Amino acid sequence: MLPFTYALRNLFRDPARLLQTVGGSAVVVLLLIAAVAMNQGMDSVLSSSGSPRNVILMGKGSEESLERSEVSIDAESAAATSISGIETKLGVAAISGEITYQAPIRTSSGKEEPALLRGVLEKALLVHTSVRLLEGTFPGPGEVMVGDLTHRKLGVEKEELAVGQQLYFGDSAMRISGRFTAPGTVLESEIWFDRNDLSSLTQRDSLSSIILRLENTNADDVELFTFQRNDLELAAIREDKYYEKLSIFYQPIQIMTWVTAALVGAGAVFGGLNTLYAAFASRIKEMATLQSIGYTRTALFVSLIQESVLATLSGTLLAFVIAYFLLDGRTVPFSIGTFTLTMTPSVIFTGLIAGILLGTIGTLPPAIRCLLPSLPKALRSN
Amino acid sequence: MKLNQLLTIGLLGLTVALTSCSDDKNDTTADSELNKQDKELASLTAILLSEEPANAIDIVDMRKTAAPGDPVVFTGKAMGGHDIFLEGRAIMILGDPNKITSCDLNHGENCSTPWDVCCDDPEIIKSSIVTVQIADADGKPLKTTLKGLGGIKELTSVVVTGQVAKGSNKDNMIVNATGIYVKP
Image (cartoon, rainbow over all chains, first blue to last red; front, side, top):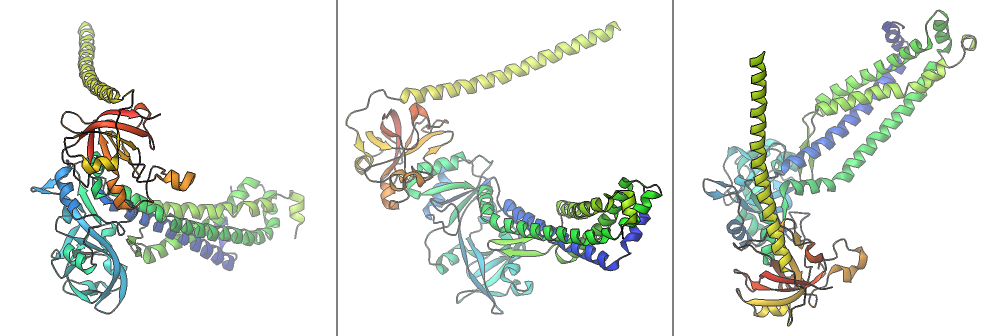
């Protein structure tokens, strides 16, 4: 085998080509890990948002969207008394009738952005068990509670949504009474209103949904209730299944991300091929000389691959460093919430594999072409 | 050596005895569950009628007059919503084909749920459907689906005899079926 230092020294024979390879592979790997982190972040926030023990009662025919759903206010008490197996805490049944509404919200600086609003009563905390109040109080009349990532959804500084600040729904000013966290869920980007406030502000006399937390994951009794109370026109869906269905809605975006990453990756491989063909073609005589002093074609082939993988892995390392500073922990708002880009082990692993593949696949054809001619022919080549 | 052999045999015997006890217990539980299922299946099968009951009325007419506890005989079609059978419960939705139209008659083969009645007015749908259940002694639906019983499936026409369940009102009617005739 050729010494490793041979491959290493060769890298610096053409600094321009080295920069091109390292830079190109860094861009490809960065794009790929961004795509993986984005898709994983979106999937993660949607799958964490629903609990298998929560069942959503929605209006029949509106099972695709909580915002479009309409449920009679009477259905909340009917469900509470008819359905068995609802979890109780300190004697209170974990059942929460809620209004979900998407509308533009204006901050005190005048910036207006659409946000997801949820009209709730205190019982909401019994079903949304991931919610924790970080500071302030649960919203009363004329007040709202904001999620820890709501500022990202509204595109404003966190200080603008501090407790005591004002938010505007149309002309109505609402005081921020508290700030809550619900790690890794879409709730964390929402604004929670007092249910009666949101009901009058949106001029609706119905709920969007009723969320029940069951003692176990068996939702048979809830479905039975919807059959026995046809007059309420309800459909039952497990909360985790609802968000699973929502993730199908976002699949085209995820596919587009993959297609873009694949196209850039393919471009990089073909670009790399072109560069390496030229680079290796000028070294045919050098390879032949090494063969004539005893090195096998396999040893030379391995050395060429080493050289190329070293360059692409340097690019991969550069991509990881850039991703760590620019992407890791960054929150990205989307229509129903905010997800976080995280450099998980699987993201890093994908980047690493991409770096190795870039270094090998792109090198194989030029390396084979360079080593294929017979020794006398190769020694005579210019 | 002899002591070792005795201990081994003793241990094996104990293991067999314990395993047998455990199997017996499991068998008993499984048997009782099977018996329960058999009984439920038998009650379901017994409910099927071989002859069509006379004087069956439409669902809409029945809903206008029947009160909780009244005996009823009515005809209907398995339709009226996206889900009309419930997995693991003897309950189904029947609709009045003279008042509401199943999607297969509106959209032909293009509709993925032809038993749905999505083109009708929600208020008319509400007054033209009835929930039919086969209840146990406590008034709760048996824990087995009605789909497949006597060939019942979506869009099957049936005649039902039974009693209007407690709690039914002008907006919502549940019938405890005592007999079901599946129309050919």
